Image: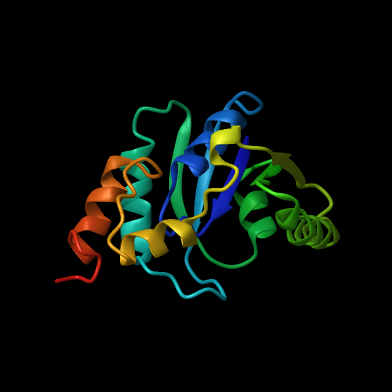
Length: 162
């Protein structure tokens, strides 16, 4: 079993692509939604978990649960043998590599597996999706329908919440 962790704020089609790819390697994947992070999240933990459950409802062998604390401790607790991480661009690599090495230092029995998304998602990030939504842009091609709907509720057509 693998564990795919992140803030998923919000979940994008790129996240779902990595999730599907990880299921080609692991028989089961737990999507671990980070409760507390150094980043300030736009959506609450409950909203992020709910959106992920809806977005991934048609993907077999996936469980979506919140977590807090160290990821390697969580991975060991649930019996995961590896952490799945997505790499979009070269700039992701340095941070992800450093995290993988630190996780290995904390727990050498949990591996890190890096997966690249489909080319169509290499530019996609939750931050960019939020920027587009705030500016009133259409994000429906970048995120699952449930996320586009939630963002529409927050920002309306103009993107300013009015």
